[in-house]
Image 1 (cartoon, rainbow, N blue to C red):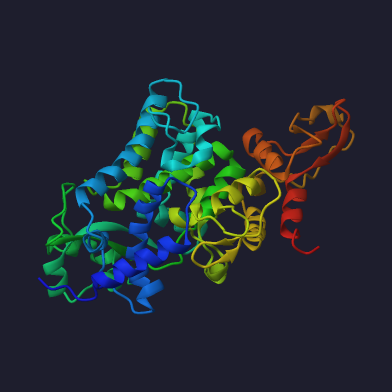
Image 2 (image 1 turned 45 degrees about the vertical axis):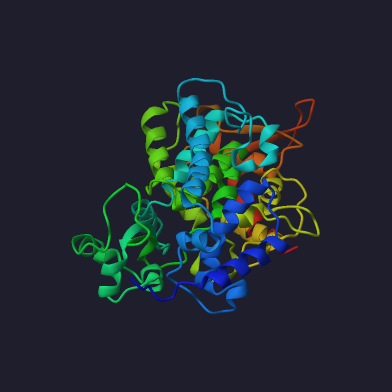
Length: 436
């Protein structure tokens, strides 16, 4: 069976060598290799690098693996082992085991990210991030967020496709990925285009292709990571990162299934300290959604791009994003394949924060008091939170979210009040932060 628009093996091999020659990731060489192999699929689709603007839309990771003369079963097993490290961590935490670092049972850091070895985490917060992160790519959840917030996100999911049926129907990877197919999914299943199995895939007849359900600019993984860190904390953000990593790795694994979504379901069912509502999930989907008018300005980094080391600063986007979340100085860095300047992206994040639903709900109402002679103490409420004078804006936002208060009181080390911040003050500042 001949499938057109598959990249020639010599081009795949050449592009692999070129990519290895100039790009390095902040992980182990073995994991770097796994991510490069997957990246070649997308580079062939987009005509990047050695493919020289010629697109090969039906290229899959299997084609790349064959061109590089690698053993498919071995690579799939290595990728699955990385997923199993993360799901094993979640299972251990739900069984009350002490796991305060993002490392596997051999002490090796998840995804080869070295700072995970030393950084202590709150494992419950990591599970919260895994839960939100695993749900936010679900097409139905995106669709509900579109309805709630009256925005356009778009999205789809990967399916096992029967190649013979695809050719008979006049379809290819390009059309499946870029046209809207939501109304045809049932038909595709009936006609045998979509193979309904979670078993191993026969690469001679079946391929794993993305089918777009609805058109739209999608979500930014960078924004999801940062927003989770600001609205909750860094450990929740790291959980979101790990869920996105599972979503990447599962695309070439021994069994094709939605493993990040499945893990989110297990956490939602078995983790009694979750304290995350579906409203919270929809909110993060909304805040991660790329506005159509700003699509060229918002990065959506793959795991490879998050870990890619900038040669000038020796920094990667993941660490720069973490610095921003924690209110530390940030390095101007070209982020994602769009090469968007990180500082420009962070300005966008500040503007986006002004639309956080929960902050707007916390704004103090304009009360009309008729009985002006009533004692003020009768209506007084202890509706405030307290932070130190060294607190960052991220700390203020976190306090507003956690306490649901209407005012933040800033105190010095002697507990003397030196000022206050209301949600309205915060929103005004974030709206005008770039005007100075």
